[in-house]
Image (cartoon, rainbow, N blue to C red):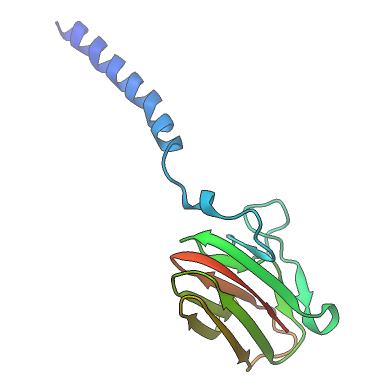
Length: 155
């Protein structure tokens, strides 16, 4: 009897062990809602990780040399980040349009410091300045919201 019970228990564990990955692969992943047409933004925070790693490249966009940086993005609940670290000036102007029916939070930051936090109401456009940086500061822009749909630029 103990041997039969042991066989039944082993069979159940094998079946459950094989079905868990199947169930996990069918779960809803918010990253699937990220639009492949995102421009200049990524769901990964800029880091010093090299290209093709787990984060985005640490490439730098020098606004004083390369000109304004355009961005646009769509995402369902997952934050987006600029694909480049930005640098080159000590003050910047950001123009952004929130096309979503939800508020959008925009942060200008480095890993250790936030220079600006702005929240745009649904379906609005905003222009604002970011100051207090050195021209050599390398920062990125962080976008967060329940359902994001935005476009804009920084110069």
